[in-house]
Image (cartoon, rainbow, N blue to C red; front, top):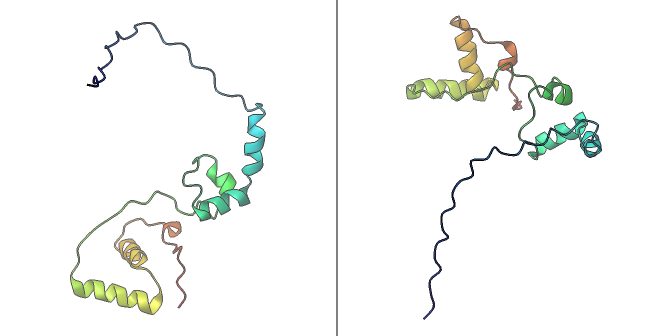
Length: 130
């Protein structure tokens, strides 16, 4: 009859101070040379558009991507609300007629109501043809 494996004995945790972590790699390190060849703005724009790059350092992104990638002035968060069905039908009709998305219609209405909404945040990235 085969014997079932036993659990290993618990080990007493070490109370010694951990070894110091190695210092960060210096920018002069030759391993950075390859990365610099790949960090051309056009390569990064292409990688972001293709979905290969999903996160970029916020401090260096404007220099790498340029004004096209840094249009919005603030991160977007989801907003969910309920409206009467006739209101939604009107918003959809306006979208079909003018090409202004429901999101942008709401932002325009908020601006008219006195809420600060910057022009950069109203741009439509989908550019629906009319």
